[in-house]
Image (cartoon, rainbow, N blue to C red; front, side, top):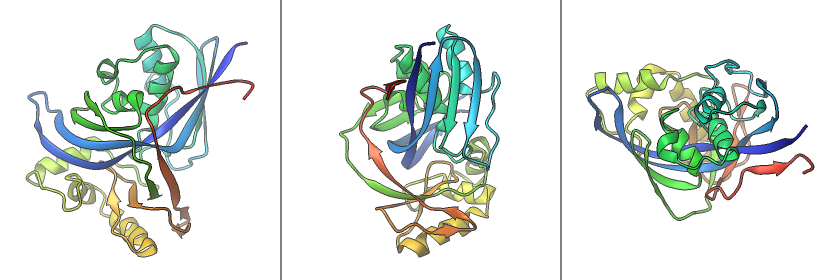
Length: 252
C-alpha cells in the first residue's frame, strides 16, 4: 500500500488587530502569523477512514465528518486513509486542525489559500506557511520575509472558543489590546483563569507573556529553560519558512 508522511506545522499568531465586522457577523483582522516547529504528523495512503492518535490528553479531537481533514478530502473530491499523530494541542489556538487540512490539500496538489479559507479561517495561512500578514477573515495573505525567531510557549489545558472570545470583544466595546493583541482582554473575560498561566510564564522567563490569537496559548520571545506550571511543561519552538514540501516517503 502506497503511503506518504506529511508534516503539519502549528501556526502562532504574533499580533492581531480587529478592524471591524462584516454584515454576516465575521470579524475582520490584521494579524501577523508564523509557522512553528511544533508539528502534527500524518500518514496518508490508499483507502478511506480517519484515525487520530493524540499525545494531548486535554481535548477531544473529532474523528468524524467534523474533522477538517475529512472536510478537506470532501472539498477536494478525494478519498484516502489518514492517520494523524497529534502533537499540537487541540483548542489552544495553534491551528492544529487547520494545519492538518492544509497538509492534505498540499498532498493533493491544491495550492489556492483563498479557496482554502472556505474550510476555516486559518486553513489559508496554514496552506501558505512561513510568515505572513493575514487580513480580511483570513483570506487575504501577504507573504513576509522569513525571520528565524525562537519562542517559548505555555499551553494551558483550557479550551477557548474563538466564537465566544469575539462575542466578548463586541460586548466589551471593541477594546484595543495593550500588547499587540486586541483579543487578549476578551479572552481573559471568557476564561479568567488564563491570567494565572500568563503570570506563570512571565515570572519564569522575566518577560511579559502575550496571548496567541484568541487563546489560550501564551508565548514570549526566546528559548528559556523548561519549567512546569500545574503539571504542564513549557515548550521551546522556532519559526519555519514557507512550505517547500510537506511530504516524506514512508522509507524516511
